[in-house]
Image (cartoon, rainbow, N blue to C red):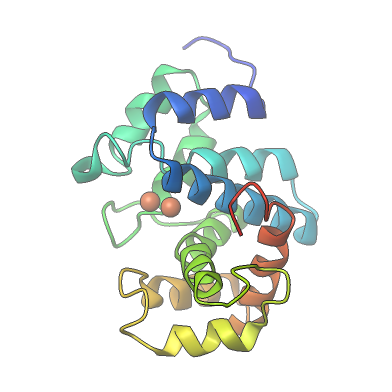
Length: 188
Ligand SMILES: [Fe+2]
Ligand SMILES: [Fe+2]
């Protein structure tokens, strides 16, 4: 396996090679920002967590039926370390792959992946279409409306929060904070 230098440019180039969809890119950037924020909160490796967030759906556009499986092949081919790949794959736990989130980084990814989608969908409903003044309660309300953004798997968010041992309100609040930092890039 070749030694590679991992940085944001490398990760973004790789992501863009496999993804042409604008909304998937925005999702990747939102999860990246969320991961960076939680790494900061937990005193962990911000760059590492962010890179994993950025590429976590690397195989989704081209191989939706082999999501989290093809990711292994792609990232392995480009020399990504095993712990990065394990983290990426584990976000599909109980959904598309039997790889359980173990590390705190993996539990965080699991918890915020679907949540970033719910937050974005909640923002789109606002008159100002901006995340600037978004409150936790607005997201909580939408969380409870099962017909709203029905594709967002609420169970995954709840499972992620309990894996982290984090209150759902706090998880939402901190994910909003992370996304706010890149609001412009993610169209919010
Ligand atoms: Fe995914
Ligand atoms: Fe995702």
